[in-house]
Length: 407
Image 1 (cartoon, rainbow, N blue to C red):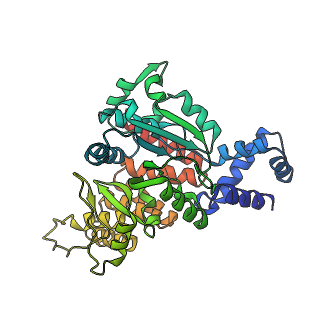
Image 2: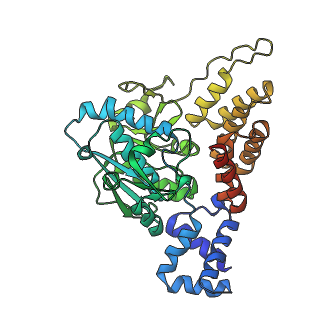
Image 3: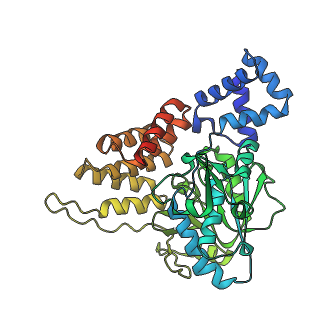
């Protein structure tokens, strides 16, 4: 009963959909806090939780497991650079680019944004970055800007040498980059979130909407729309693309990056008035493909054992556009002809996860790993799922496996 009350408080205060991480994960967080407070009965902890406001922050830090690293999903930062250089800078050369990162966790994302903008040729005077998180503990770590090797994943570490100093196996971010990010303690589930702030040209809000209940998600999406300038970009995670299908935002693509553009009222009217079911084409950006819907091309025939990869490409496009049922069908059609393709299972797992079918997603990620034991994306997705489920032991073993691949 006491846990149900705490779960209800988490839902009301931060919009947490308990099913997104599971009651087991919340029970584990409560148990850890009870041990920290030397409390043996959950009913006593509930009273403690209600009597001491600071315990709220401590429990939030246990419930929320920030999983982030520098240049996570590097395609998003490539799209950011393309947007800034091909559209924003030519039109607003004397203005300041305003960027919001929420949640910013321990700072890897906003610092990646700062580095990406510097690498694009902008000066520190040409952009402003606000980074917001509900966790005060995460913000303290972000402001310290000292990281270990787990904050660096992937294959490209060139930026590490340019912007970090290695001291005793830790990486200290240059002060010149640290000073480019303004950290703020805030709760996106609060209806007054950043109510007095100026609008932003770019917002990164990745891997958060999937944890909200439907009411909070709708409210949050509305807040993000209001915080975004017309023509600005909202970056979300792959699994969240389908959640924005009913908004007034238009998808923008470059490679596998996912972002949404805020339209003007006139553009929204044109979009709603279109009865041809053809994509709405806005003024085209170099390297940016802008589409409003998926057009599924006719399938090409399979010749012998040489499977044409168009089906898989179409599945990716459908998934990126939020047409998840079509993506599932296309993935299954592809797998029927090529049952040993790990990429197809990973994509199918990602789509199932976007649909809220985490058990199915886990099965597909495991199939991909069975076919290709060192498939980093499959291992990463599975590790994140295990963390969401509160199975930190399994998650830790998977992360260790991933780290060994990079040696």
